[in-house]
Image 1 (cartoon, helix red, strand yellow):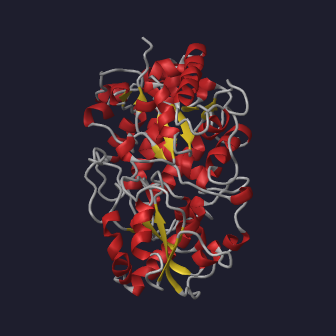
Image 2 (cartoon, one colour):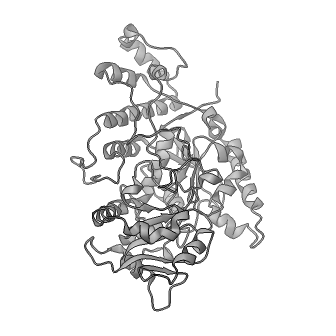
Length: 484
């Protein structure tokens, strides 16, 4: 993907830097290395951790004017206001978009430099970001505000229902259909009907509906899905110039079905260059956190949140069960969990299937820890269900990039246990001091709103968090245009 990207910056940033003598810095939340080797995760964490990607470029690039390839300004040039004005008038729409993104980067960088302690609240705003759950709340907030101010998405109109412009809005793949529906029928702030004004382009097909309508059950042949994706990209790349000018780097798809990554292989540029928003965010299967987005898996039975989860109990409420899991033997991790803990310890309420007189959500609401093992693929709806319940998620997965890790510190509201340590699970959880557990639970309550599906969407909810993840990847780099 890097071969199609180059960083951009405007004369605005140069003026900003010269006037305020701000040194070159990296926009990080703690100590982010954007070139982290994700194949070497630590033993304490089953998946890689990464932060809001750096929004700054090299020193030489910082003094390049918009629309030039390598010339730099000297002090006399910076004072020739009339020359700068004439040059600004010559900017194309694409260059004007990039200039706006450069200004956004400067604003976000300023917030990073003025970094305030994590408990800082933001004046004159009802949406307060507080607590250790955020890597840097001031930077996240400023990035979010810039997204609201500038970010525009063009939704391709090609294709017919039901596979395009629609998706499942209930049950296991709820998030896939609800996001597509919102982009198609809502999102007025972010959607543009003018593709020349767009920062990114949404390819609105549903992989879940491909599986339902064009896949032959039990054939395990996903070639029809790949062919559909290939044909769709061929249509938009033939009809419009936007795909070809960036090789798809400013385009994104979204899929919660397990086969989303496989369907994206229908076009090599979509797979390698485009932003893929996926529930199946498995780095061992080609998920690239530098350009792809991890999508939280949300299962709403019948399309609605259970009434029991609308108002979870307060933090000081009694939770008589120590740990809880109930689920089928899907994938390699769950059988291992049940082998060691099913029916073996009253503190570890582990079931394959709950007895009919037991209620799943009641167990979550009354448990301190909710065990969230992967199934066939890495994501699990239990993580979000645990957050809804005010129960601390215990993530049992390998190679999983957790959603919104750019801005959220998952270690502040969840426990991540290496799957090989499942036999020691009770020992590991019991060793967590009560004070730390209380902080973890408080963190769960804080992040709950970031995983809520609202209709209509609300600030900082899951719809906007997904958009922000896409925004971060778009603002971080400028797609190279093929136009001369």
